[in-house]
Length: 176
Ligand SMILES: [Zn+2]
Image 1 (cartoon, helix red, strand yellow):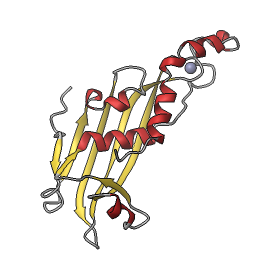
Image 2: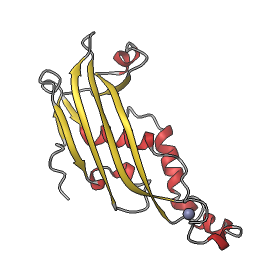
Image 3: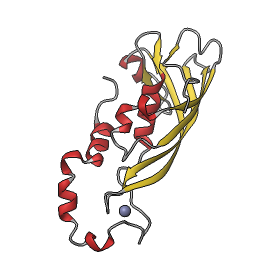
């Protein structure tokens, strides 16, 4: 699976000026924080990002992402395939002060130098659009019969609980 079409970094001095469009696939190996919330390495992430200037010269990043990944079902704790899709609409800013001055409808993405880390940006959007809990369809869990007495199963994975990981990622300050 090639992901060569998404470069590691984009040069923020050029991409908005040139109205670049970056699209392609990203391997889960390039999304380690997101990978931690998943059941396994199987899956795909594709995206398209457009870089333009807004009316007030804001540096806009707009686009969309789609992902097919496997999370843990919180009922039976087995892998569950889910599809994620999200629109991206961000404004690139140099620091938190600039973020404060943005239009309320624009979400800031802070990049202090000229190197925009594309995987990091996509990873954050993926984490934000992943549901905190997911379940198999009713009746499709692997161990329905164990479910009633399933507290032990839940206990045994508590140390590596992916939901806790996801929650903490969502709650953590994204700017550091
Ligand atoms: Zn299940």
